[in-house]
Length: 287
Image (cartoon, helix red, strand yellow):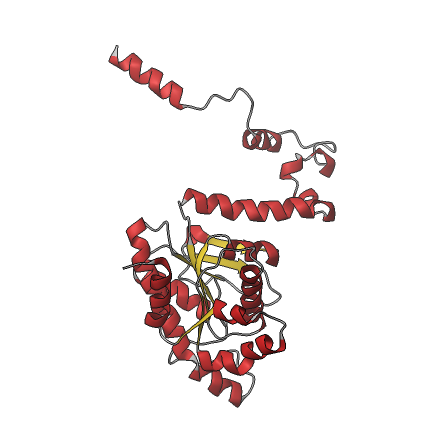
């Protein structure tokens, strides 16, 4: 009797689905006899036809797929919130050469900025140690998955054996995921817009280290989303106040009137990992 009860429970646990699955039909179709008809592209199942899926007309479908794939994966890992680390790919680790320098001045500047690599790594470590308290469902570190500051962020999380996300994107020059990204949380995107959505939709804090056009794009995209109320206000922390004050005159924008005076207050500055984490802790009342 007990054996029958267990069998019944197991039967109920299985999801009833009288229709054949798409994956099973895909396998069946692959075993059809090879004839001119079955070898024709038109005979391929639509969802298993790469040429059809990559056609210009299906761009909207591909956008949706890029949004859903990461969403579903992060949900499976119970990741509810993140801490974003933006920053330059060209900043080397301390003691390493500036591989991207084009002249002696750039080499000196980039290698002189290597302390930002270490601060990003240490900041990610602090976030990840706190994330452990929620079984790594809150404050999970996410970066662009590449070298430089991105690598530092992923490395800091890996230092304390915490999961860490990498959102890579296909670029004309190779940008492979750095070795510290958790393999199951390593993503690759074609659409910048969808990648940006994934950076911001779970963010509880956003940190920005010195960088180039890509970093500036991410900074101003975030500022605009918060300023316009399309995104909840979260701590937005710029590491290296002297760098940011030199390249962007935020006060001049407010003085001119193109932003409100209080918009300047959307930005925090930090120099060390502890400075940045203190801002996050204060904002959320973390002891």
